Structures are given as structure tokens and as C-alpha cells.
Length: 350
Image (cartoon, rainbow, N blue to C red; front, side, top):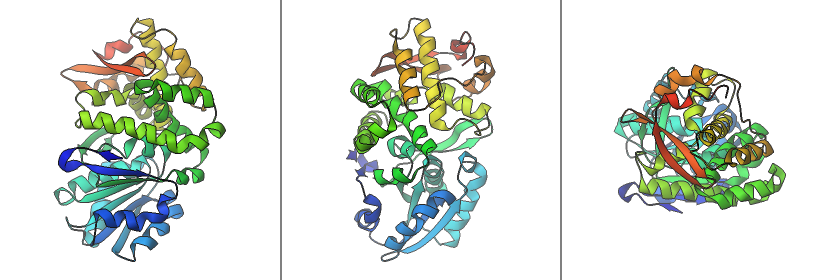
């Protein structure tokens, strides 16, 4: 499928076994030059040489490997990438490839956006979360101690290559993590997708449909991004659950809940609170909790909401001095609710 953004348009290819065809896919958008592959130590051990061995036939290839985990998505990691690119003599006519999950994709995208004021890059996401969400849409960022994704840029890749087969090598927690975002898409835009997740009810029954699930999520994001490239209107709907999720991640120093797990907690707790305020159709929170439990995701973290409000007030979803919380009218239909951090005052323990 194609993300249609004028000069920033790019294709997304979703295909089982695609990792064996990287050379042909890259050649379509990048005929010659140097390539820098950025990956983390876990992913590179699995797929680094598979990708590089194909590309070396046509290109001068270099690589830089970062430690896996959220801690790498920081300002302190950027100089390592810049130095590696300078040593490899990467120029604005060359190409950078992000091979890995969301941390690698976000960090590499921001480095590509800022190195020499912009170098072409390609996303090859290898985690479920990155495949259904973070690799598409052009958001790149690093974290600050005060919060997640607070420094970044809108910078679109030239190509996104998604191979669902790589999910077979993922540790189960990474599948669970990605399901948080899959469920999110059903909640905000696709009641039929949510119904399918309810009906499957387990990873074993869902795996044969995974390529179809990924395509459904990516298509939703593609359509939303085309309407709102810079996240000031409809695209904000993609942040359902994230207002709490980012603060939960920060509260535990990115060491306890993963991003998808934190999103799961945020989706349920915000919907529970919205139901109590009469802002969401009754019964939605229970359906969300049930599907989260079916896919082994948490729905609470046992911390008082008021302990999180400081980070909520720094959240980048604050616009025009309002905190824009994403709520559901019902499953499959979401909306932007301008409020303030006091929205969470009566939430109690989340």
C-alpha cells in the first residue's frame, strides 16, 4: 500500500518472507551509494547478516549496533550514530536502514532527520509493535529524563518493509507488547477488527491471521496520517491510552511495563474513568479488559493517578493549554476530549 503525502509519499510492503528479498526492494528506491544499517544487538544477531549479505552485492555497506531496550532511545545514543555515519562517509545521497523494533526505528529516524539536515532512510520493523504502528507515519523521537518522545521530528521513510515471518522468532513478551497497539486500532477505528480479536481469543488462534491483522492496522494508520500528517487533528486519535501509558513508563523508569503493556493499562483505565463520567458507552471498559486478559496484557499497574499528573502536564498531547485525551464513544469510534490533568483527579488507583 502507499502512504500518499505528496513529495513525502512512500510505499509499505507487507509480505511473508520479505526479508529474503531486501536487495530487490531497496534497489527500487535507491540505485547506488552507501548504506548504513542501524540495529540493536538482539535483532542484528538474528537478521543483520541476512540483510547485509544481500545488500553487499550492490552497495558499500556499514552497520552500527546499539544495546536493545528503551534506554537506547536517548540523546546520549545519538552521537554514536552520528560518529558511525561520519566514519562511513555517509552523505545526503546515501541511505540509512533501521532494522529492529520501535526503539531502533525512532532513534534511527531522528538521526536520519538531523544528520546533514536529512538523509534518506528505510524502516524494516522486526517487532509486532513496530510493524503495526511506529514504523509508519514519520514520527521520530528520543526520550528525555522528564518524559517519553519529547524531542523529535516528523521525517518520513522512503520505504517500509514488513515481514510477518520475523514474528516467529520473537520472545512471547514482544508479541504481547505489540498486541497492545493492535487492540488500540480496533478500539479507535475498527469495531470489526476488535470483534475478530475477541473471537480469536488467544495467540494460537490469531497467528494464522497475523499478516491480515498487521495490514488492517497499517491501513488505518496510513489513512489517518494522510489526513493529518503533523498530529494536530485526527491523528491524535492514535494516542488512545498513551496519555497514561507514557507516564507509567516514565514512573517506572522504563524498567517495568513495556510500551504496549502501558498502552493496555492506559486504554482500560481511561475508558473506565470515561464511563464513570458518562463520556463513553457503558460496557466498553469491560470488553477492553477481557480482550487484554485474553492476550496476556495488564489492565492496571497499582499506582495512584495523582502520582502521575506531573508527567501528564508535560505530555506533548497538550495543545492550546488543553490536555487532549482520546476517549471512545463506543468500540470502533473515538474522539478528542479537551480537558486538563484534573481529568484524572478522581481516578484513584490505576
